[in-house]
Length: 432
Ligand code: DLL
Image 1 (cartoon, protein in one colour):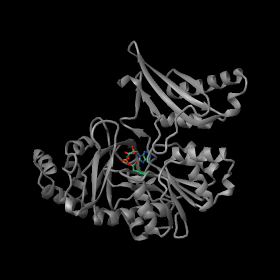
Image 2: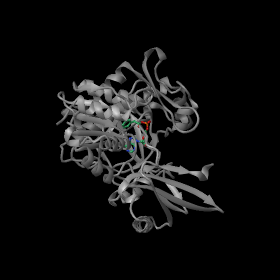
Image 3: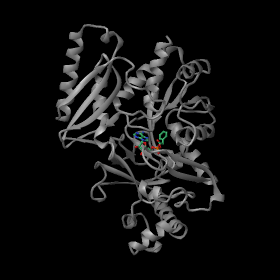
């Protein structure tokens, strides 16, 4: 089912023309309205007319989160504040937040993108959608909210937290679509089971999960425990929020809304543009934004692109599930480690809960990785011998996949803190 078939299934040649036209427009817009971009372009000796279409995109400078920070709060806005009707911000772990602004038209476009996204995820006019992404400065709650209203679904704007109440309302209000982070969905499933409520008593059919990396194994687990079909949605505040890319029911990559965003993959070290299919950092350019257009924004997210037409009929390129972030990737004794690799291994083992934490330390100039894994209630109260055997098995599996020695610590159920938004999977003590 499509929300906007003409756009979602647009012939790639026509799409390319549209993108070129819109790119030229955006370059003019930032050159004449955003002094910071004008300076960047002037430093490269570039005038707007040097960009004649998408084929010239690699002449343009990259933008980073640091550029947004340097221009805190409103320095990169391309319109006066009087034209801005909404402000969001992403907190980040250090320093000032990055601030993003939307004009009235931006909000309309965002709702259109989210309507497409939610339709891909099985949301219809008849759906009852529980929006358990956080409302507030985070873009998840309000982004999904506006899209769901555009679709005409009945929206429950519950936000994150108060998990028992979420479960109760999910049952009583006959929620059919659940929208939240995958880690929170798992927590909801857990609390639901503790409350003695089975997924069969609920009316859930679809899950719209995203905002953090998650593995195929976790998808299977969530689909099973919540008895729904789960899709992955991707986005970032600097670009618009959720609505940048979404899986369809084929679940084989996330369609990037290419009539709104241009996607490139680069080598994060050299900045060189990579070919279709190669894995690297995703770089996005907005081509329809008024409030805060961004040029070649370096997302730090690692993925690859696939331009072939999907079985669903959509022509927009598909990015693979995000492997991790360039700044999340742990380099432990020279080995690149993504938390999601470990997540997949863990979930494939029975007897454990898919809650884990990676702790990295440096002792005498050597890095040590400790993996905390929660075991099931039954196993925990079982014989020590069994726990030891499981510990050895997991240790061996992780070591053989990563080629790195690790220490696995099996911990009691509920030791690892649950999050209502994005989960914290890594504690890197080396940075302290
Ligand atoms: O997380 C927007 C969003 C809200 C997306 C709700 C999906 C659903 P930020 O807080 O700015 O925006 O964080 C953006 O989160 O660069 C990725 O590293 C990560 N991320 C977002 N979606 C996914 C996903 C929102 N599906 C950052 N898979 C991005 C993996 C994701 N990582």
